[in-house]
Image 1: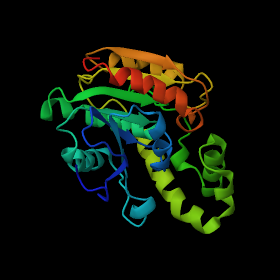
Image 2: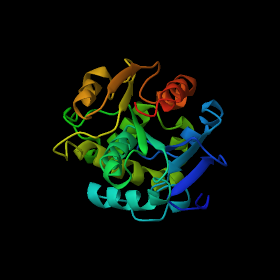
Image 3: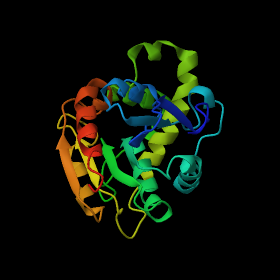
Image 4: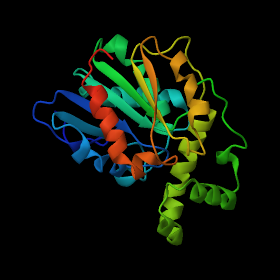
Length: 251
């Protein structure tokens, strides 16, 4: 097991001899705390890790990524210590896009090790991004839009100094999410479980149903309660789905 203080990866739940590893990718500007709250609900033999990108927490002062390819390359290299054993990816919203990009790389480099790709609150690559782009908004409009999404604690907007530190990361990653599209000639060779909420005002069933076209394996769409940030508001529903699917190695 790699050191727990690896700047790229935070170990949220350590298991001495894990049956599998769940590698998590937060939404734009998100932190590992979303997935830390899952740990009690994840099966005892599953290790839980979270990818930590620049621009937050202990990496707050590091330069953010402006393009997809360098980001994918660097995260793939950073995860190399963990990918040679059975694992699954879970990504929400922006994190779902990143998880999908990595799932394109792992089957060739680590055959048979990626057991499943969980994607939630994330449009399929062929689904058009809604306009106008948030990342092009003025500062005041952007703040209003972020507040309206509901994933940021209301009290944070009362802390101007902290807000000025964090919002550039949110804008940067929302930009990557908005410009992202179908970058590949085929889907992933990994089963996909796509979780959506009918109450998600950002990406619901309509923009997620296309995921079935982006895997050569099984794809299922699973409805869960909550709005766009159901990974925070309804963790018990999500972890139940994850536990069930992680028991099926072949998808």
